[in-house]
Length: 83
Image (spheres, rainbow, N blue to C red):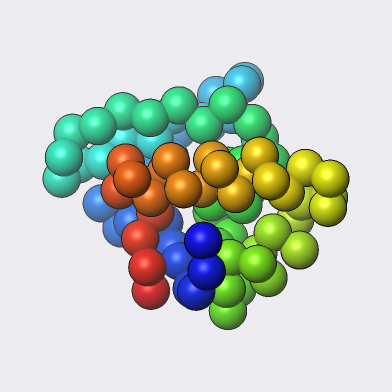
């Protein structure tokens, strides 16, 4: 995943002990974000020029591949979108 991405404006994040629930008001999908670190990354994606920069700012190198897969899944679910 490359380029600049952001949380879709139609998505609301509700904090939970395990991470967060993401509800998309457009497609009515409910998605579980099962890590507080993933929630922080998703919230701040729009503050970074690229996904790689966002990952570098928030996630340790050895954990990045799993977060990249999670972001791809969130893109498919329309939780995040290209800027």
